[in-house]
Length: 217
Image 1: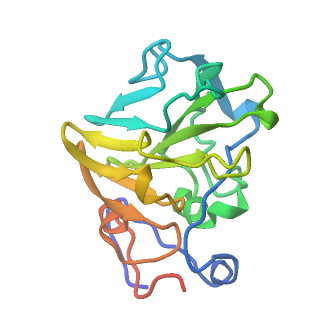
Image 2: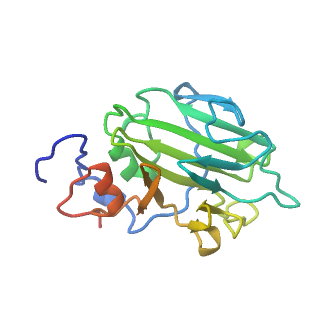
């Protein structure tokens, strides 16, 4: 690994190579220590880009849609956003074993912010179908966006044509093409590319300032 300057991360891969799968996977909705996240109402100022009674998120000049309501699922039944407390997005406190790559990117958590938007069809989270968008912003100005839930574990519901990331008539991602847990990368309100959470040396990680000789295998 070569020397680096500015805001650059070094991913220490020795133990991580054994833990990482060969490709990204769908992930269930995140449930974390409530002491590390503050909960706010959709449509409030803290839930940036939202409007009451809407499941759409408008931020980074894009619109993010997890899935439209159906005859049996109303994703506005239990909706809120969670904002990470300063410094809590770090490799020690972020414990999810299916996101080891992201956890290493967090490092000590300096200057990293995060917000999650939850849209569930049940007040009991462990019985709910629904989805959760997460936005993680790094000091470089790069934001990683990922989608949790809709993994088929409840009622076999997965993303469909009503699931998307769009800017005007330009579609970055459509659920009709499937979703495998990738992270979508934005910088200066522009889409940079995606990252599978495992591989190295792509446009998204380069924008973040990650330097590799080799990626994950």
